[in-house]
Amino acid sequence: MSVRVGDRKDGKLQVLNKARILKRYTLALLKNDKYFPKSVRWMYAQPIHQEMRAACLCIRRANAVRVSDTVNRENEFKYRRMQQVEAYAHFEALLDLIDDVYLARYISGRQAEHWTKLIVETEELLKAWSKSDLERYSNKG
Image 1 (cartoon, one colour):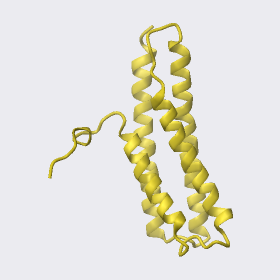
Image 2: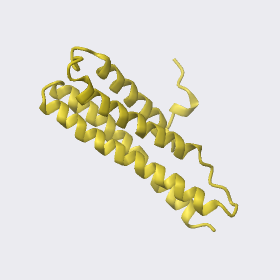
Image 3: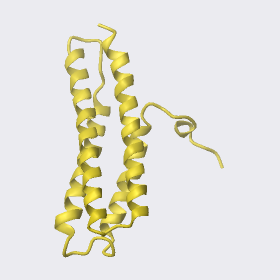
Image 4: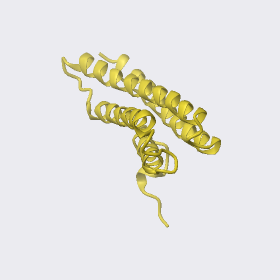
């Protein structure tokens, strides 16, 4: 079986793929009545869904910004950086919500560990992307 060109090595934007994997896992857990019965869905599942969605939107917005060599370069870079920082903040809030769900015994320790691992991996890729952008765009100009 062949591997797609984009998946052969760690690219700068693997954060997009990792965020998609995290989102799929999150939505699969949230849909399951076994873990989140309808009686508590508004209290736990909805905030988790909102944070996950907000983090993914921030990553997409940051990716959509093309920092050019024009007069708007500084503003474009600041907006992109702000979206990356905001995505990181949403992931941190998501970690807190997962901790709450685990302590309330709606998910097992294994699930909490896997979920946390996915978030931390995504955060690391986001940090690497942000660092790469800082090195790329702050030295020029």
